[in-house]
Image (cartoon, rainbow, N blue to C red; front, side):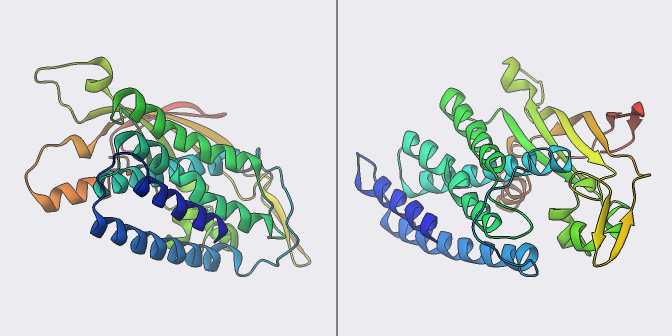
Length: 296
């Protein structure tokens, strides 16, 4: 909550300094909605991740090599999209472009610092410097593009399928779809989606929405660093399952660049723009080489 109050103070700084023309009604609405989202999100996260885990004194933990770096990329993507939302909201309130980029764009880092503090007081984890660095990278991807191009030409995206591995350790990887979307790194793929038209400055009839996407994923992850773990007095040994990194190459669609006058479609395209649109993909998998997937 301490960090959230700092964020609110930054909002007020945006409101009172400089030549911004602040819409008071929108600004007040933003404060109320942001407060509610913050409290609701942190409450839900605590119930999903931390409720069953014993607390401890605040401590640090080096988890850089866990989960084949999937959780680090997830942190960056979350920070990126919270920054995008923060920027858009401040612009909607009448804050200047530069302040919206910096204060809104860095909102993800401030927001996710709360999660790092939760980890710091959890006996199973600890405050992770690499998580914090990943949050800053995600914010940096947004801020740097907005400053350089005043648009996002390279977008972080996400795709998911329900993997066969979650059932082997449901307490950690998720016992249902809602939990697995967050917890099961085996089913997640994170993408950098490059807008071809804007990056190559292609005009005329070339589709403005067409992107080239590079993805990263992993499979065979039962635990953070190994596939054996203790639960109570019983040892679970899945060491025969190989832990594999994956690289993907595919096409994608930037839904926000599809022109439409329909407000419902515009809202849908903006809301679900973080999801990678399925296309045939080439995948390189550690130990298994290259293959073509019909859809990914």
